[in-house]
Image 1 (cartoon, helix red, strand yellow):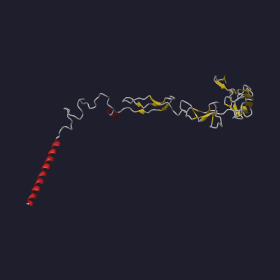
Image 2 (cartoon, rainbow, N blue to C red; image 1 turned 45 degrees about the vertical axis):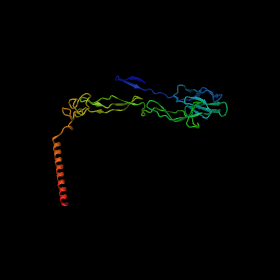
Image 3 (cartoon, one colour; image 1 turned 30 degrees about the horizontal axis):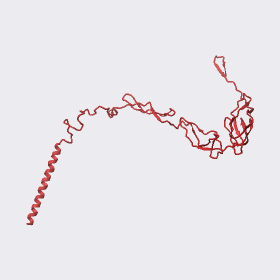
Image 4 (tube, one colour; image 1 turned 90 degrees about the vertical axis):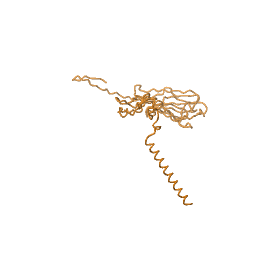
Length: 276
């Protein structure tokens, strides 16, 4: 990009067209490979793209027989079983190179010792993995227990919505008569992200303050601490004090009982006289 000065004195940007040069040829530098046995060390392949200034894409590795060798996305070849196969380095449908690969040894080759790796869910601060079968001897990962398909990746990306590590409340403040309060924001301790925003608490009103808890050491009734709220100045409770209304009821009940007793006595005396 270049800048030009116009007649009015303003600067303008001129964008130069960039020529895209397509790759014409790709070459696998190592050439044909030969492994003595399935126990041989892995070999990493490298490519050269021509013309070298071309805007080539990433190379895709294709194995004719995946039971004999395994090639990861970086071009690392691992022998699996004795035999012969081919490996292709492909840029486009027409730009590619091919090499022959031979693995020596017995025809049975490597026998995978597979163990199941259970699925692990990703969290906000760590990746997870799918369920897969792992060979402890060659280090390859497979889709099933039969080892029918090699997996290039078993990783699950971080899940920003699956928070782990606990939470804490920040920026909380109590409401007063002069200022609003705040419930506080909830933060994830795993990733430090705010999960939930808090809410404003309105200022305290007169009713709120009158109903507020009394601090320790204060007497809300303004009474002598030595005298209970239900007692008189001599320490006697109101339940122990005899009220005038209570005495009147007592005398009325006593009078009714005496009257009833007199009536019963008179009736019994009358019956005795009749019998005689």
